[in-house]
Image (cartoon, rainbow, N blue to C red; front, side, top):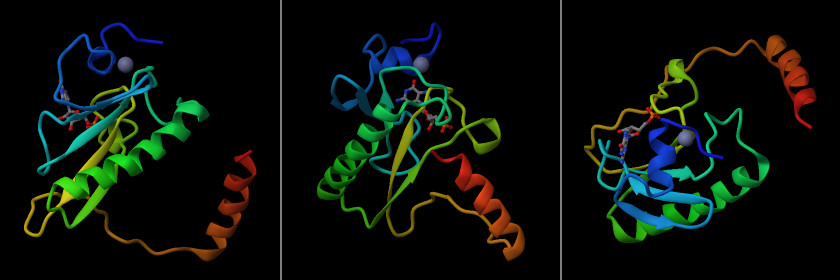
Length: 139
Ligand code: 5GP
Ligand code: ZN
């Protein structure tokens, strides 16, 4: 299912050009137009999902299989030393394009990529209660 006025629906389905690395029936992988580092690319499903909360299981399963293959190919071709896989959901989490996409960001010594957070302190009692509640919602 495509969504009108969604740029990644148009790119994924070939209506708008992109520097495509790989394409199959379900996904297009293309280079990010404003790369964080050399080789920064996006894995985008052809079907429209706003974010991870909406994605179906079949697509989700295929997605990570493809991600491992893209990661290995980037590693083989580029002299990368590491790779961040980043996937933003919601404005507060940094999402700017509201069609699910997974960032593959190669890492090199001295690069300017910034993916991080300040480690907090765990309240073990609260965490065990939360673990039960969240766990119970996972079917
Ligand atoms: P987000 O912030 O939603 O996680 O990531 C959106 C990404 O899409 C950004 O890294 C941005 O550079 C990239 N992007 C936005 N528009 C286009 C486009 O038209 N073509 C390509 N190749 N990348 C885009
Ligand atoms: Zn879309």
